Amino acid sequence: MTTVTAPAPGKRRPREIGRAPQDTRGTWTTYVALVAFLLVSAFPLYWMFVIATSTDEAVSQTPPSVVPGNQLMTNLREVFTMQDVYFTASLINSFIVAAVVTVSTLFFCSLAGFAFAKLRFKGRDPLMIVVILTLTVPNQLGVVALYILMGKLGWNGTLLAVIAPFLVSAFGVFYMRQFILHAVPDELVESARMDGALTLRIYWSIVVPAIRPALAVLGLLTFVATWNEFQWPLITLNGTEFPTSMVALSDLASGNYVIYRRVLAGAFMATLPLLVLLVMGGRQIVRGIMEGAVKS
Image (tube, rainbow, N blue to C red; front, side, top):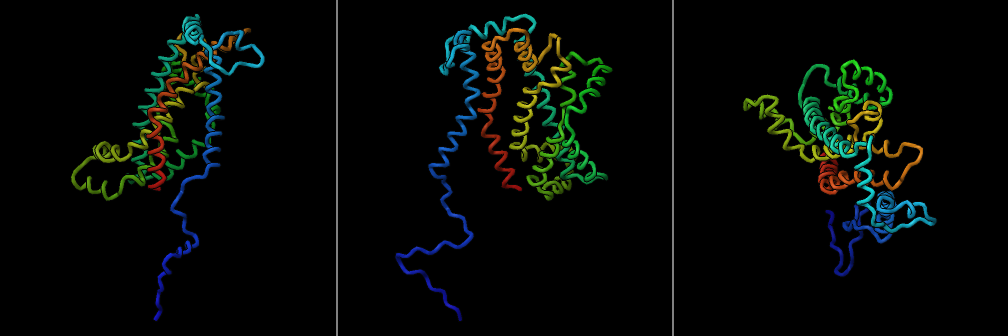
């Protein structure tokens, strides 16, 4: 018979090999590294604000000033009143495009993710493989064909040409499918079917409430990516009176003589909505990522 002896009073029990320590707080070097990384990452934004608030003399002086000036409103007034730039319209157009694309992506991607995760139909797995394979194809390869298609539809030069190709994304379908696969139990879906609920009712009443953190993450990522989209809006909206914010910034930066305080003042206004959105929704991003990590 084997007896187990308790450790003597006053002596610490040796930690078992392979067991993680309970205290997971980082050392001071970790915090120093994080603060340094934060400062390096935030410096371009700060430098953009410094130039946006400065005069031409302050921008061209050597060494350059690292203190913000007091000319922000003057520079913004010049940006918003410039002809052939349509900066006010560009901000409105960017918001319309980003909002429509975000809402459409959340609806279609969550619906498709629910179908791929919980519904059984012929060809489900091969179709999912095709969706994943589309992620490996660069968007630049389809620009010419997409431009021809939009021209045949008569949409080139309008916001429809910017919105229509991005109403659903392969990444969103895959992300929703993976989250729903772990967040919604099969037993819950089958129980709802036995109660007589239709597929759309199951999706709306059971799936959507369970995947709200994932919807928040996908919505924020989609809005930011759509707002920052430059190549395709530049191709289809160049020279029109309906630019997006990125196209308007390219117009500000074009010409023989570029006034950098104007360009960066416009960039500051185009970046400000994203900063506000990320500050407001930062918790949702962390929550969605953490819940997805725990579920997987």
